[in-house]
Structure formats: C-alpha cells, structure tokens
Length: 219
Length: 47
Image 1 (cartoon, each protein chain N blue to C red):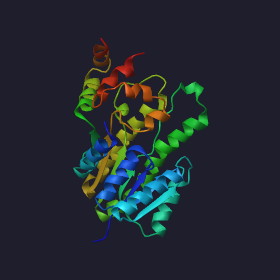
Image 2 (image 1 turned 90 degrees about the vertical axis):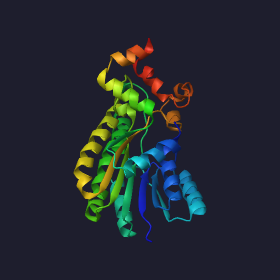
Image 3 (image 1 turned 45 degrees about the horizontal axis):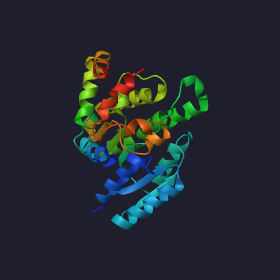
Image 4 (image 1 turned 180 degrees about the vertical axis):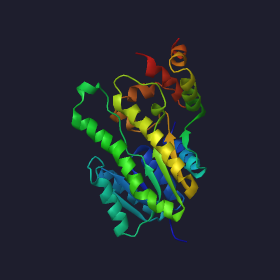
C-alpha cells in the first residue's frame, strides 16, 4: 500500500513534534518544516529509527516570503503528494505594540497568517482534485476569547485562522477534503518559554487551563 | 493539557470533519460562556 504524506510546519517542538510522532506511529510519511536544523534532524532520525517511515526534514524560515513556494517545489520535485497539511508554526510576542519593532510584527504575520494561507492555497487544489485530504490549522482558544492588552497580534491572528478555516471548510466539504481549526487552551510545551508566560502556566493546575480566563481580564 | 492529548483529539476532529475543535470540555465551556457573556462571565469568575 502506498504511504500517505503529511506536511507539518513548526515540527521541531511542542504540538508540531507531537503531530509528527503520532502520525509516524500511524505509518504516515512525513515532510517536517522548522527553522532549527539540529532539533529537526534529531526528530527525523528518531522517527525513522522508531517507525521505519519516509521522512524529509526541511530547515526553512517561514518568515521568508518565498519559503512556502520552496516547500511546494520540493514536494513536486520529489513526487510527494501531500494528503495532510498541518499548519502549526507559530509563536507569541510579549509587549505593547509600540514597544515592538515593525519587522518583528511583520515576521509574526508572515509566519502565522500569510504562510498558513499560502500553504493552503498551494496544497488544497491537489487534495480537491483527488477528493481526499485533510488540513489542520492550529489556532487557539485565544482566537475565541475577549481581547487582551499587550498581546495585540496573537489573538487577532488566531481569530483570522479560525474564520479562514471555517470558510475553507465550507468550500471543501463537497470534495471530501476535511479542514479543521484546532483550538487548544494552555498546553504544556516550550511555547510559553518563548512568549514569557511560563510562570503563569506553572500556576495552573493540570487540566484546569480554562481558569486562566481570569488572566485575560485581570487588568 | 499535554501536547499528546491536543494532537490525538485534533486528529480525531479532522477525521470527523469538524470545522472547529476546542480541546477539553473546560475550554469549550469557557469559550461558550465568553460568547454569550463576553465581559460578565470573566468578571464573575474573578470575584
């Protein structure tokens, strides 16, 4: 039986790495995308050893405008037909909008929003033609919650992702292409080390992430 | 919530062709309450 291919962005850690691990265990072949070459190579090596799957690891920075086309070209050149796309790459930036330089904000929009849309635009048509495919856009409950000061972009981008996914889901539903916006609450990954909310998450009893709703409104 | 739970639930959600999937019943409840009482519910929790 021909193995199906899944493409995962932000695959070097956290939810992305977990997607890689669970899909590999189900026998999927993988194209893993992340910036960090060493971590990505380590994950690739480990998955191939453990599950004997086909796996490509591409060290690509999604903040570069041409990155998505490079990924698509790589798949075309290697005759890889993506049946599942997991748009997971993302991060948070702490601080007020005026304290953050434009390049930082622009990169965040490119990685979490433009890149996600472009990858759907590149890979969805083939899924539609085949009448088979799955796209998971990793959003967040932050996209469904009241806005929070000093987290200007994160929630807004996730709101966009949810709305975009709803729209695409409706477009795709007659073609057997399944499209889902996944909205986790606080999740135990290194995400919170990067955006400066680790101490906050430590205070949350396991499985009680919803209580952090209070955090959204404490100021 | 562990990343493993988030991912396994997400894979089931896309398999079932769910448009939006919110992980965990507590998160689902919170989002729903915020939708109906955007300010009031959160403030009630704090008090």
